[in-house]
Each structure stands twice: as structure tokens, then as C-alpha cells.
Length: 372
Image (cartoon, rainbow, N blue to C red; front, side, top):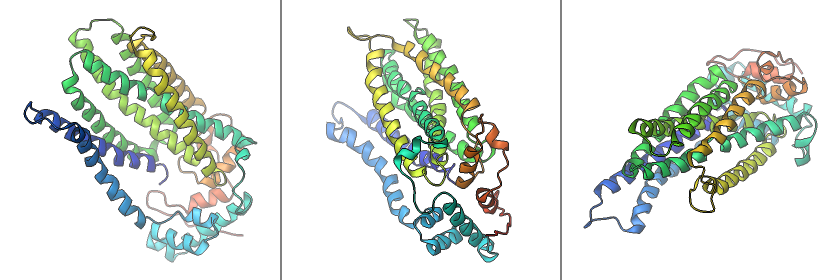
């Protein structure tokens, strides 16, 4: 389920944003000279409305079983087996498949050094160095795919062309489409894998950002050109969501069993650093005021170029890890495969392959005897 979690997070996040947008539109439409919302309530009410889903998640998380693999790493085998029995079909617990899976996890743990989860410097040694820069690159692409540009340029464009009154509606449409995008990813991740989403996010991001940059660079715009940019801004959000989700999926699994947690921690740092850089530089590049670069929509060319690189990165570099266990990931990188597509067809033979065979696929668990 790890490939579904970022999309599920998006399904948790986007309805909050959509609900906040709806409330903001209501406040905007109800505002009259005699009954305008006070400044405090004007921004507090949409924020308060968006808190409700988070409170629900906070209450339900206490009923979520802890990861069996994490419990095995923490030397809590029996608790791990109990939780795995909860997560798997009852017949798997009865025929011993869950016990065999826990046994295989323990054996895999011993292969990578037991309960020692490695040092931070191990991220830059051996095949982990390759995994680290791939994961970091995915999070850099997350921020450089154009999401910040779309958020900044879209709001400015709406105001400059007299569409400020409709801006909340446009943002709400974008959020609604992103909900559909998250649901599409949840369904298709098991069929397509990781690489296609990176490739398509880069390709379509390049197309729509190039369109926005080219059309928006021509000063006064005709109504058709204005509508083209509005559509481009809204649709581009879908593909930046694909890039965002893919970064978390790839980052969460590429570290394997031993250094996964440390790798994701550094990915968070890279993500925030890239976000700070983009949000600091972007206003200077877009602003037309004296002392600024004044590129306006032409900044979109930079992000379009980045998306084109993301497409190539997805084709050649990102490893396809669909259906692989974390233990298999270690074996795959130890095999020194050169291109991303080779990971899909490589046949693993170690403990990781046994664990993958024991995990349910399409609701069916393969029965595999585990031999010590």
C-alpha cells in the first residue's frame, strides 16, 4: 500500500482546500457594504472549515495498525505478526502465510546487518549514493515542476486581466480536478507503476507551461488567449500533483529496508530547501517593478525546461519498483542495473523475492514455503 499513501494524502488534503475555497466564495458573494466579514473572520472561517478533516484523521490514526516491518526492525516480532494478521485476509493467517512472511522479514533483516539501521554517512556509500541522488532529484523536480510558478502567476494573471472575482472559482476547479487526479493515481499505480507518472508529468507539464509562457508573453491578450492561459494554469495543477506524489512514492521505497527512514528525512530537507529557493527567487523573476527581472509569464519557459528534463529522468533514471518488496530493492541495486526500465524485468532470487511472493497481489496470496 505504500504506493497509494501519497495519493491518499492528496485525497485528504485537496477536499480541505476545496471546502475552504467554497467557503471563501460564499463569503465573497455574501459580502455587502453593510455586512462585510470582519478582517479576523474573513480568513479564520475558511481555515477553521479546513481543520475538521484533520481532526477526523487525528482521531482515526490511533486505530491504524503499526507497520509489521517496522515492528520486526524494533525486535517486536509477535506484535508484528498480530498486525500483519489484521492486514492480511484471514485465510493467510490460517495457512501460515503471514508467519512465513514475518520469518522472511527477519531473515532479510539479518542479511542487511540485523537491527542496526546504519549511519547517516551510509547514504553516500556504495549503491546508496545512487539511490540518494535519485530520491533527492525527485524532490527537486517536485518543487521545480512549476507548482510554485502556477500558484504565483495564476493569482497575478487573474487580477491583471480582471478575473479576480472568479479566482476562487478557478482555484476550486483546480482542486476538484486534483481530487480526481489522486483517485486516478490510486487506481493506476498498481498497473502503470512509477516511471509512467514521472514521464507524463514531465511531458504534459512541458506542453502546458510552454503554452502559458508563449501566449502570456504577448502583452495585451485577446479573450481566447486569456481563456487558454486560465485553462493551462488549471490543468497544469493535475500534472504537478503527479510529480509530487511520485516523489514521495519513489523516495519511500528506493532506500530499501535499512536506510529508508534516513533517506526520507534528507529528502524532506531537500524538498524544503528547494521550496525556499523557488519562493524566494520567483517574485523577483516575475515582478515587472523597477529592480526586478520582469520576465512575467516567460518564467514558465524555465519550468517547462525542467519538466522536459523530468520526462527524460523518468525514461532513463527512475527505477521501476512496482510490486517489489523493500528487501527486493536492495537486491536490485546490488545488481548494478544501468537503466530505469531494467528494474521492471529483472528476476530477483533472494529473501526479498520470497517476501514479494508472500504479499497479496490482486487480493490473492501466493503460497511459498520459507526455508531457513
